[in-house]
Image (cartoon, helix red, strand yellow):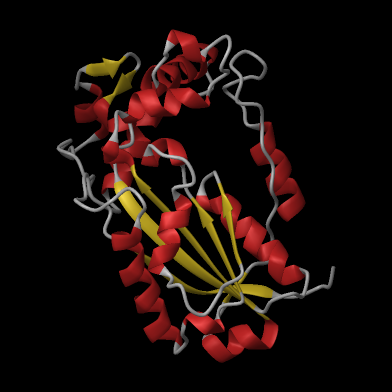
Length: 262
């Protein structure tokens, strides 16, 4: 594998909203993103050497749902395409490696999801062990509450620190649901629990959306963007999703990935 410099040269995203009227394959959200980047970079579909997407068939409610999403790219000319049944961050890593191999000079990564199509708390629970945990139907918010409680009881974080995260996030953007911002951390702590010890502001809102990133190598990146955002460190790690096999108050994969990437 060759040593190549890879950069982010373009990014676009669909409006992040509580609910869209579009289909679960993401086509309506993706097409405007693609054309925004085509216009910004002065390229077209044929200039992309590799396409890679990340999405979830569980959210879409049908198998191979990503195939329908390819309609947003177009049928002609044929493309070099791949998909991961995961978060689009995984797709970005695959595209990054594809460029490092020297097979392509450009890649477009896209991710999409229509979380409002089903009962998200139940859908996410299907990621648990299918024999010992999933039959119990523990919802995702309650499992997050277990993790939060472990951290609180062990002293690794406090309710004030949890509320501070939500408070600071409101300074960057409003939520897409009806949870109103607060004037202080103290006000957030006075709000009722939703799933003890979690309050509504601790829980990510259900959101429909899509995002697209264009990667390019070396001179091609410089042609497309005056100041490309060069990727100087990246690493790919994962931990077991099974409850009880690891400490939920630590993320060894994050530590290991950061160590290698830096």
